[in-house]
Length: 302
Image (cartoon, rainbow, N blue to C red; front, top):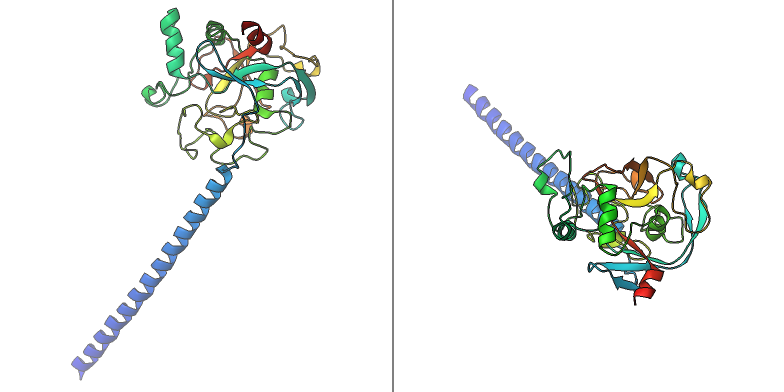
């Protein structure tokens, strides 16, 4: 009788264990399905943010500069510079009128800058601080960086160009509207290379990697990748006294202006109206070059 009780208890235990195992498998299957659906939803959402309708930039004239790089013409006319919702040095938001000019479609690459170094015997760019293996950011296809403001001026002059003014840079990035970013007012994954690797690049990205992030004139990487030296001397209150036509920045000051958030910047710090400043001798893995050229010079040359 005792053996029979043990047998029945064993059968009940085995049966209960079997039922619990089935329930566990069903639960794990359900949980796995929920996780797959969640991941799919996230992927779908990210893809939807980056996908934009094809835009036609062919209405904007392009030329090839003396060093073989493509430039886009920014038409003469007005635009709104600055922001009433940003930092104090971005205010006041104001209207400006710029003559037509050309600006590089993409940031200068290391291969292009190295060609300049070989031809002029000028010193190579120097990156004083980088927390990882430096070879990860020293590649020909990546944007040039690590040059001082004077180096950037010299490169553009060698190429038959110049650095853009701060106003020219901002108009090229935002067009005639008040957009926060080259693509619009809202930030989303897949438009630019900023801090972190959710955009697919933990550090620098080859210029032109973000099609959906192009500016109204078709320029690449006006937000993210490397920030860019411009010609102006920095003045916190310059917008309060800036001339209406073709401003060129303050005549006094010890710092130069840098525009465009880099690969180490946040979305807030990568707005088109955001202003940065640095000593002209500063070299950094986050600062690069984009050159400009007067439209009048181009007509005279042709």
